[in-house]
Amino acid sequence: MKKLSLLILALSYFQCAFIPSPVAAQTTPEQVLTTARRVNDYFMKAVPDPTKPTFVKRERPSHLWTRAVYYEGLMALYGIDPRAEYLEYTDRWGAFHQWTPRDGVRTLDADNQCCGQTYLDRYRMTEDPKMMEHVKENLDYQMTTKVGAWTWVDAIQMAMPVYTKMYRITGDSRYADHAMKMYTWTRDTLAGGLFNKKEGLWWRDKDYVPPYCEADGSNCYWSRGCGWAYVAIIKAMEDFSARPMSKEIRRHYRLLQKDFCKMSKALLRCQRADGLWNPSLLCPTNYGGKELTGSALFLCGMSWGIRNGLLSARRYRTACDRAWNTMVADCVHPDGFLGYVQGTGKEPASAQPVTRDRHPDFEDFGTGCFLLGAAEYYRLISTTGNTGTTEITGTTEITGTTETF
Image 1 (cartoon, rainbow, N blue to C red):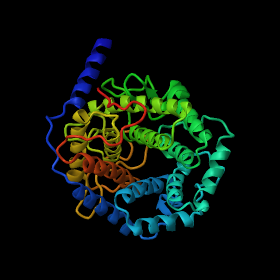
Image 2: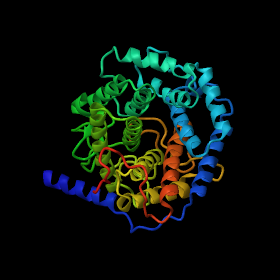
Image 3: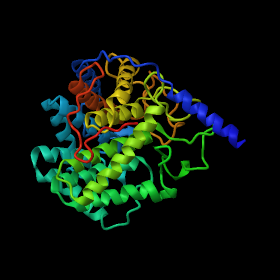
Image 4: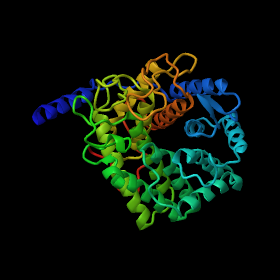
């Protein structure tokens, strides 16, 4: 029986790993930007007043995590398309909520802290203290409490970049150190550690660690859950490298770089033949099919990794090109609506079926994920062109070399 399970697992890997031979991308930076604008314009027209609460089964304030992820994407879009209306839309939202985390400055819930990422991005642009003061108060309070608050993998994306952005702004290493204490507790301690270092992927929470597995014997790794961790890692690395690195910050960076490269190798291996990823990364039979949010987050991370010299363009560029081309062809509707977005949940079975025409319960976070991927892919092809060749411009001072898997 054990040998049979191993054989099934190997066949599952093979099925996930089979990717057609490379085809040079035909997309231009201008085409990427046009598509990103179309997707964002759809959302801004659908939600003209960003201060209004959402209502999905019940009313929630508009600085909940789903909207905060949208604003992460909007800030990424602004980075490549600096339009005043993006900042006006952001500032109406932030000012309405008094630039405060959801549930106030004493919240310990990572979901409630996610909005702080955009508040701090705006602070860096304006140096307006009101955009930062309540976020700082919240983090200072949390650092006096226990470390073990991130009990699900999504929390790493929701909250770790808030800490690392605060470190980037202030230079106070306490924020970086605490972020890494929280990260490593989730990575190594919670339920024996949510990061499977051997397979390079994350279990979503304590309910999915072994002996939980899919029907084919593979471990259950939720696509978007792994995507959250993947993007959080690159955000933290970017913040750490924005300042001269102390010995301790350098150590933090190296750990994240190691995890990033392991994840990249694993994700490349299980990319679908069409360029996207299944909701259950290693199991194409359990709710297998196209899914946008995880795919967009993986595109974001891989594009960033190539551009910053951590991933080999020879191995990863085709994966990025194929992911983008399929996202645009299969997921983006003419009016900018996004299909194949898995709604809120915690596992492959959540919010099924995931189809091209079905509206998810919340549209905002799917748009945010798409914009994160689009912005990094835009930067990648603006640097390297659309031929798949690379000219690395952002190599890290840690190694100065590309990952060679």
